Length: 86
Image (cartoon, rainbow, N blue to C red):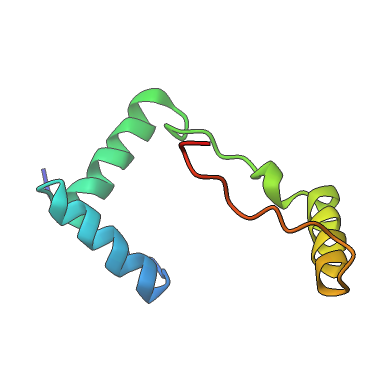
């Protein structure tokens, strides 16, 4: 079986992070993409959910903007972050 090359464009920081994770897992980027490609071919689908994160919905972003505006104008409650012990 002969091999072929695939060229993709990806942000430099994403590439570095991906290479780091692959290295930590003991595999190369080529091996990771090969695993992904074989799974796609075997299952006939992307092997994970691809969806829009509801956090970034227009309603939630509007709510966050209003909350930040209220905090900036001194009319909101800064609740901070909760510790695990609370």
